[in-house]
Image 1: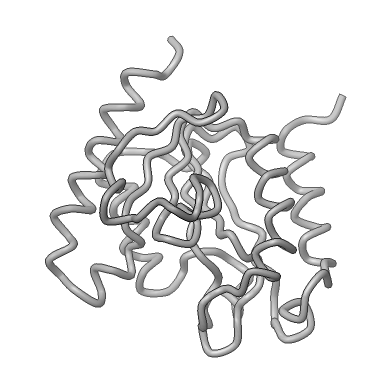
Image 2: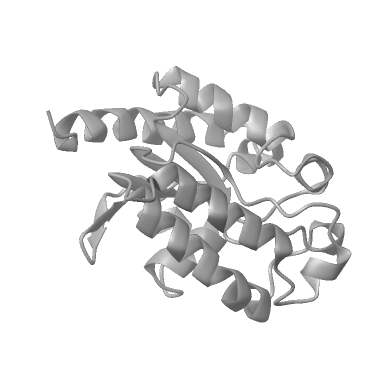
Length: 190
């Protein structure tokens, strides 16, 4: 029987070989994501940036350092979380993801969610929130809200890069992560 870790590794290899859109040709490295194959929480961002494209790892730049500090703040340990993105390849000049690119990568993200079966998915920012909750949602109105959709619990928040652009978001994002910690205590099976 194939383990969740083996399934996740196989998906990562398929993602690295993917050429479903033009980004597969322009990237240095695909960035499948990383973390526990049976993680409690999946953090889903927008797309890899330059640092991520260089290293083939998600959230390793400045925004990623903030995300990892927030994860430490709520005492999630390695293996208890998975970090990924909607797009698995970097858009040129870090531009916004285009609809065709999102469509090409969407099956990879959905397959990762199906393997990991997290207790909570945390969409980070508008692109992951729109994909997972619908395009009519606005991140400023639903951030910090616990939403159940098709048996999956989601709690969107701002992308950590928002803090880099505007430090006033720090308190809001920290409060959302603290709410996530409380939510995990409520829903985690004993």
